[in-house]
Length: 409
Image (tube, rainbow, N blue to C red; front, top):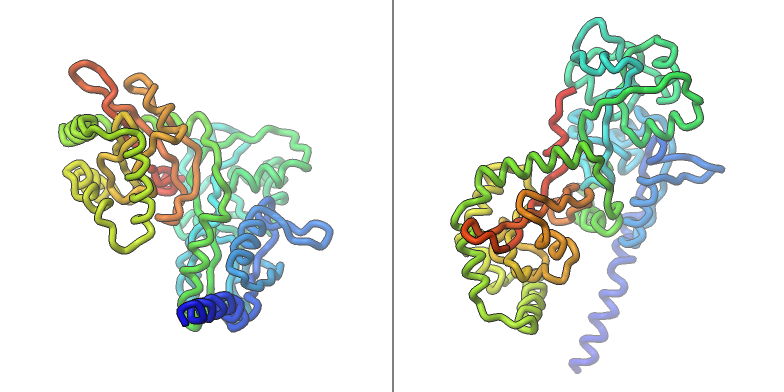
C-alpha cells in the first residue's frame, strides 16, 4: 500500500510542472536590438540576455517567445497586456507602475565617453555640454530622471558615436560592452576617452497583471537566475584598487574588534579532527535547506555573529554578507548563514590565509542567488596583534551595485 501511494505521488509530481507550464501557455517577451545583449543574426535572435533567458525557461520547462520591436513599443505592449514582459531593463520608475522587475540577469558597466578628456571632468548638467542619448535606452532614462538635458537623441548607438566623432556632440553615456560592439566596425578616426560612472543591473519587467494571475511565477523565475547568470566578470585594476581601499577602511573601523579575535581563538581551541569538521560541514549543508537549523542557529547566536549582523545592518546594502573563519576554515561568525560550515577545501580560503597582513584577495564579480544581486568577495587574513600568527580570515561580500552604482555623473 505504501509503495503504491509513493508511486502515485511520484506520477503526480512528474506531471505537475508540465501541467503548470501548459496553464501559463507561451510567455511572450518583447525586446529591442542591442549588442551584445540582444542581436538578430541571420534571422535568429542571440546574445547574452537571450542565452540567460533561454536557460531559465528551459529549466522551468516553460514555453516562451521573443518578439523584436522598438523599446518604446516593447514597454507599451506590456502595459497594454499584449506581451507578458520586456527586457533587458534597468530599474525604471515609469515601468514600476505596471510591471515588476525580475532579479538581475546581467550587469552593465556605464562610462562617459568623449573626444576631449577635459570634457569628462565637467558636470553633465553644464548647459554648454551637448550630450547624446539612444532613444529608449536605459542610459537615456537614467539621465532624464536626473534632470540632465540630452540634446541629441538617435535610434542607434552607432549614430551617436558618429555624431561624437564629427564634433556634433560632446558626451555619451553608454554601457561598455554595447559601446565596444557598436564601435567595432566604425573605423574610428579619433580615440575616445572614458570615465567610469556606475554598474547597473538588467532584468525582465513582467506585467503586474500577469504576475497577479500567476503569483508563484516570479519567485520560480528568480530562483533560476543563479543557475543561468554568467559565472563571473573580472574587475579592472582601478576597480580592484577602489574595493581594496573600501575594505581596508572598514577593517580599520571595526575589523580589529576583540569580539572577532576572541571568537577565532576559541574556535582554534576546539579539538576537532578533519573528519569531525567534514561531518559538521555535511550537517550544516543539510540544515541549510531546512526550516529547522539547530546547528546553524548555534553559530548564528555567537557574539561574533551578532556583531557582524550589526555591521551588516549598519552599512546595508553595501555588504551582502560578512563571515569569519578560523585558521582551518571553520565558520566562527557570520552576518547570515553561509552555504557551508567549512571553507578549508576552497581555493580562495587557502590563498587568503597565506597572504601577509594588509593584503587582500579580491575575486571577480559573481551573481549571489541568496540576495539576487552581483557581488565581489574580498577576503582579509586576520593576524594576532600579539605574536602575528594567523587567526583566521574575514570575508566581505560587497554588493557591486551599492559599491559602484551610486557614483554621480
